[in-house]
Length: 403
Image (cartoon, rainbow, N blue to C red; front, top):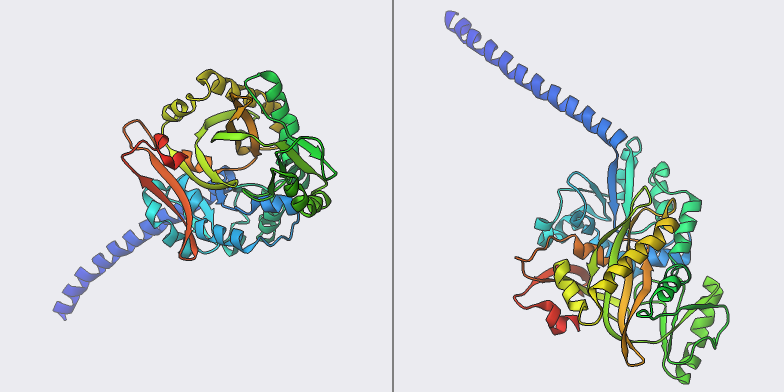
């Protein structure tokens, strides 16, 4: 009996100590959970969304919109991409959490510590102050988020309508390209909106573009009268569906590039950097990751640093008043260096992308003069899209990779 009591004397103090530890941990966890709920409710919880079907959704302009298979697969394969520019603790909406974790493994060291969530998980976040940060805003995405319970987190119908209008090639031509070209004879470029076809507004060769379309799509080249005849049915269908067609002169391209910006909540526009990319028939192929200085040096072979700076300033000045109260977020302006009447000219606005771009993705990777230049590639292999960062000792800006 005495032995039993002795053991009991040792046991109960030990039990009390363990209970005390558990109570302390539970206490800490409870208040940490309360703080997290308070923070998410009042400070805001950012939810990043990669919706590459955005441009097609703008063209369709439907709330209940089913993207083409290729767009759905791109979203499923690369839904993890926002982890490249997100902050630690942010959420990223993906089609499949397990697939996202597998897909990101080659790029993990470049990514923030985020939480991947599926669409069904959003219903549990209705009481939190969720701040969606998509690739681009459109009616279809807003409808998708509202169905998931985030009704108060999406832009109003009026704002969505304004974003769609300002995302059209017609709006960019009239509000950005036209004043830019008028400001400096080192620029060249023209884009005319027509509601009839064949359009006799510009001579052959020329380019036909749908007012809204995704990268590489909705574009036809007319080099000969035979091309005009072949594209007549397509052009008239575009006019019927989108109430018009854009017609532009064809230019002999020397180099593609872009400038990336961000429109802040107070209307301020911030320049983020140059984007050097490669396209095939208008479709994106890849981007060079290099310092701003190195990219400027490449472009200085054709246009002066002074003109690049002026272009950056002019775009900022023109769009500051136009975007304020309507669009907040990243955007990019695609440009071309071309030959025109035997001279090198700058086309300052081939496209205005009122959304995130692959140029912004490339800029999310750290880069300084001590690091080798890298090539960011997105390609399709073995039935899936993949992103890879290729490192080489060569100067990519001087190789065929940029040609």
